[in-house]
Length: 368
Image (cartoon, rainbow, N blue to C red):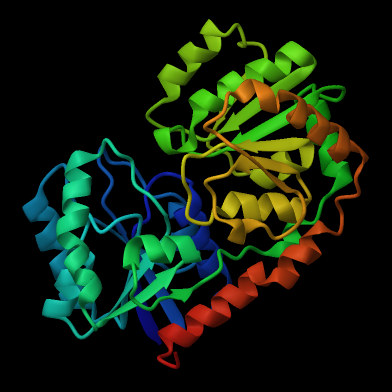
């Protein structure tokens, strides 16, 4: 059995977490064992902790970098030395955390995977930007295996070095549009006659919620029979709730927090609004297209995500007002369209989890 240590999972139910768990659920666990490192502070559990344990995975809790750099390094070193992993799989947004690369290279025979999941970095993260600059030297190490969720994510982290693209696959058949669930959820949320907009993402700068809320405000000016559901949690929650109050949208913007029924919320909804500043290749857009949910997304997101014709782009450097009518037209089109076969396009494009798992199994088995 091949043993793989996954580094990069957090308590957030986000894109990296969804990707790793989609792989873990569908990989041959008689041949590949996943273990996980939890570096979260304040005793936070990893996302999907209960499921990880049920599937046979171990979770090692170590101090976060903010708590103690030395303790973080020393305890990770012990885990790597003790368990004789075949692979250390680093799921990264930047080069800022390097211990998952340097420790196994120095203290073990484990092969090291560096997997890029993003294509940009916030300008204000000065310490992280400095560490990213310093640690980029590891990109020139010939002993690491470079993976990326998209071409742009690979170019961002690895520049001109060779990398392999691993699609952010999902179980496409599970996302086949279900009109019965749609009706049930629209009744449950009392939105049967409303224009239902959805956003799924961490409440953080990257997702550009300030633009999103101003955009939705303009939508409501044109059609007050509209509602926006925000799925996710994060450091900007308080600030965004204050913004909603300032815009007089308390009755029209609903914060749902972290949810495990995002697929059903997509069935319920008419259009996904997704004006991120940057992304790698967001799983949520793969999922949305599989459900047939139209998505209006920022022009900063890689065109690799254009699996179907349900994606349309907006220029987030413009005023959101000019895209209000586009959003309402998208809703009208969505309500009239047949969404039930959309998942087949996603599967055909190579985004089924079976394809993703096959590619990773080739790497983990040493055949690639």
